[in-house]
Image (cartoon, rainbow, N blue to C red; front, side, top):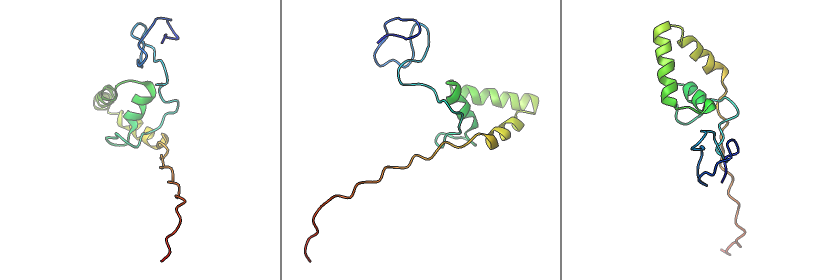
Length: 106
């Protein structure tokens, strides 16, 4: 497989090009900013930003916490993002098909 950005040969199962660092293949970041339903700590705001910008969630949480403690205004944008960011849509399981077995005579 070749990187579409730099044109170098990379591994077939690679998610990121080892030469230029660009994401390759079908592993693209989210296109919509949402609060995921799994992996939340409080409201999922930091996890949503981390997935949207494709960075580590721990880094986002630490930066947000330092900003909140140092400036005392970091909590207000968190609450605003909690209200404004939509939840991730529910993924419902597909219904199982009813088998066409003949009924036994009773």
